Structure formats: structure tokens, C-alpha cells
Image (cartoon, rainbow, N blue to C red):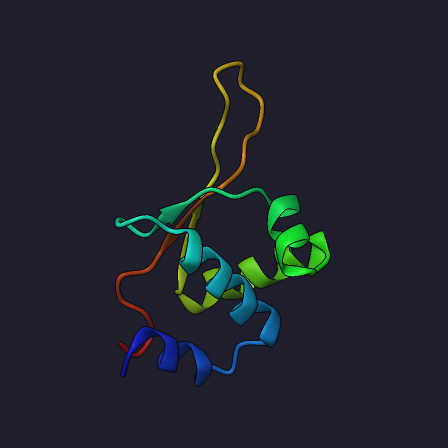
Length: 90
């Protein structure tokens, strides 16, 4: 079963599927991308809080790893999202 079929059969809410597809569309060859939550919200038409819930859903289900990033001055930056190479059923 492919990644997308596994995602569709996962029982995740549609918000999580939308955010996963958004991240997958922006991920490079290594499966990494780092859009901000406000950017994801703007581009998908979801609220920022809905994006945050979707990312949490994806983390819990094992589809995405999230690492916080810091700027050189110590301030928070956007998260680094890494799509899982292997998921719950693939």
C-alpha cells in the first residue's frame, strides 16, 4: 500500500490529510520542509489552530516528525517538518 492510500485509510480527519498533502507538495528530496503555521493556514484556507491540530494528528499517527528550530538570536523560527519514510502500514 502506498503512502497516500495508507493516509486515506488511516482514519485521520480531513484537516490532517490536507496539511499532509501541503507538506508533501513542498518537501524536498529528503522529505523536509519548513513552512510556518500561518503560511500553511493561509495557503490551505484553514485556521492556524486547525493547522496546529492537524500537525498533532499527523505526529501521533507517525506520518510526520516535527523539530522546532531557532534563529541565530535564539528566537523561535518555523518548525522543520520531515515526512516519515515509513508509516503505520507502508
